[in-house]
Length: 358
Image (tube, rainbow, N blue to C red; front, side):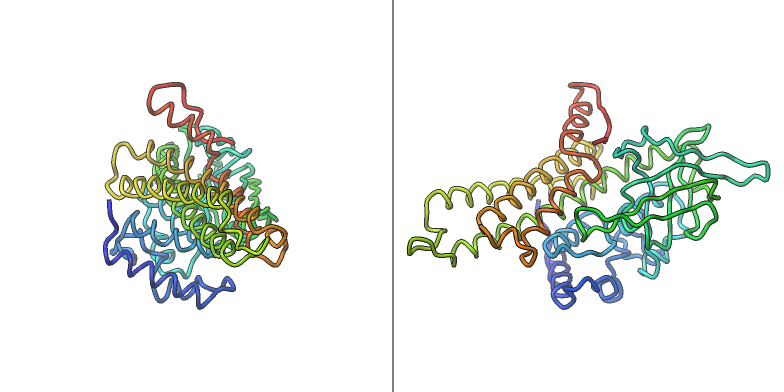
């Protein structure tokens, strides 16, 4: 499994753009100059017509830079939900980046579609009214397009809710990871437009879950790789007892273990990306493996980054704490490593799957 020269060119372009805009203002140049917002959207709807491998490359670079851009929430989760439902009306705006999308899905810390308890009822006038609370909505406070999962008599369904609709309240959260904006969405009779077929939302969300996990795993690999680079560089320049600390055998062993973790995670993430690109039947297994392995690898390497930096690693001025927070926040996003191992066991028939809760 190898990425092509075109993928490497995409990587270089994204990395260069992020280097020029390190203050979080990278979304506009990334969308206008590179077209990242529409990577996975078919050309007939204004996108680039690419797929999971291109998303993988972009997510790796965003992870390296901890870029606070709405790529995962808008260009992956929201876009894939619309594509899975066959609703194309909103795709052109998302593709060009003029609109940012958010998928309001998780409840009570669970991303399992079966755990959705928010309700949607058809009124006497024929409109749908949604009631419930959604948590961990990526970019939900600033999104222009809001897609909400709710339960109808037919099952789980998806609805578009206008961001200024009466009965909708968006609460900006202060998460541990400040580079990943999240919101809480409160629905109290807000009107929604059905997306796709009534009752088909659970199938669509399971597809979105797999693709979201594949993308998030790539981000975690990129961030873990950057943590390792920072740690190796520091170990080469920090002197103790007249020698660089990187020359001590114990430090060498820890760096070697971190390197193995990063490379193993890279294999898992890339394998899942190829499975997604081929729309393989085994994608749920690959996605569960990638999310579990990459979450744990990133958490471990981010921890080593802080420990081997010593005192400076716990200061607010150093980036080590930002990677550490992203690692532990990302480990829980879309389901914890434990839950994805349970999901994998269920896919393999080893035990009953428990979905993607905490």
